[in-house]
Image (cartoon, rainbow, N blue to C red; front, side):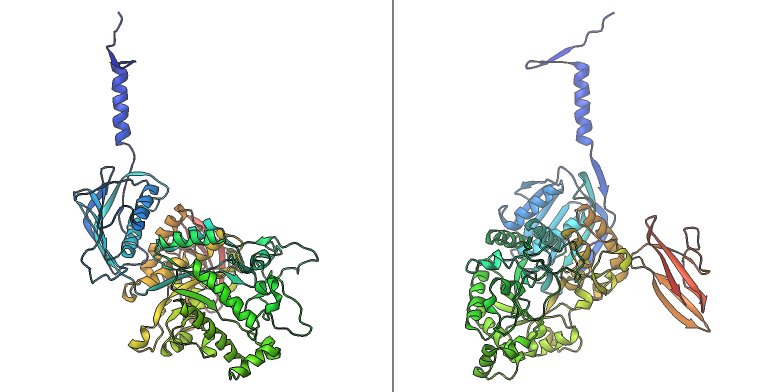
Length: 632
């Protein structure tokens, strides 16, 4: 007996009833499929001023809409947020009227005095999500926090439903200057790599990109009036395969092939990209020292000294004598001309002019420099240095810009208090600059130099031979002790530093930056009483996962046990810990090799003098860095 299926006609298509049912079932399954994730707890870096998580939830689903209030869809911040949501596979449609099941982003028409210019308020309720701020900058930072409230793998995984705990977050920054310095002279980075760095800054609410654009190892900015800065000064003999400081000198006739520079079009692209992320790009044109690249291109700008050899673009550590001739009127005109083009490219309020590491031997022997000193009543070469900085300050001031200099300028006088001091000499320099009424940006290397090792040298890439772990970065406080309330107002904030002497790639640059940049970001944004190292230890593990999912090369951290030993009655009471949270430490005290079968550290242990303690650290089930030995 034949079974006849009823035929359904759709235009020219003939479909059986059974086939139709299968199609409908498949459509229903497709509509209901997709991952659902429930966020259990928020891990926000930098830590907000106020965060309270509650018991109810809101679910972001395909039905969730996006509503902008007092903010047009074509505003840069609105476009940025919409694009970012699409990249994370969250695609809410815009609506105009209030409704439930909506993400509402509001630019306040009545100022909320509690949050200021960069603060924000986020509320998640069962009815929807609200982000509000007084300014677009505040909305931008609110959005960065909102992104961190989503699953760690949101950048690489498409979720159909995201369940968020109810919460209220109120937040604003402690310091207005939250900077990241990047040296592109020792190692040159592409435009796309610079933009990736700007994305990283934006994610952690850093707002000043200090772009180190010239040094002995290369000139990195296009200058029309002095083309040989780029034709000659931007290129050096390639020794990238050699260890820093161990490079062979250039050979006769060897062609300079390593380097590059940013065209004016590329700079404009980067400045615009940064502005969309609420980041001010601050160029550094280092003068009058660190000028090997300048003097290789224009040797006439050096002091004319008998028997003095010419200059070439440095391929290793900075030569101390590569200093411009401050007695030369041609040099002054060169600097003015360069600054004319720089201010056309960068709309920033600030121009950094370096001013550090001056070795004045050439000036002491130079007739022009000594003449300049006599004509201006200067008593020594330090005052000559100060005189030049003052000339540049006055010139840039007429163009509506403020100069920033490293704290070396405090030695020479002449500069007015309108000059901003970047203090890398520690609290004493920051204190000295502030009480002299200079605005100050603190960049203390003992907390901020991310070119240092962040773990044991045997297990990390070659770096500056100093040790700066994540836990030390987290101790950074830009505010020196002993300032009056009035002087404290001069501390604008601080910034992290990455000099690329030992950096061979952008991938390695990220490794040096992360996760320490996150710690410094919290030091610059979060209120002091909201900082907690144990809490940060837990949070940073989530952010390492998040950053890895975003495509960043993040260092796992230092796994060498931190030893605290107290001698009591002839024996040591020893406490072990690790910088990375949730590690397991196995140990032996008889000199044997520790394994996961050895005793596990669970609390202070008592060790007689002469004990050989050996440790093995496991993290997420894997051995980290090998065995460490300690002798008591």
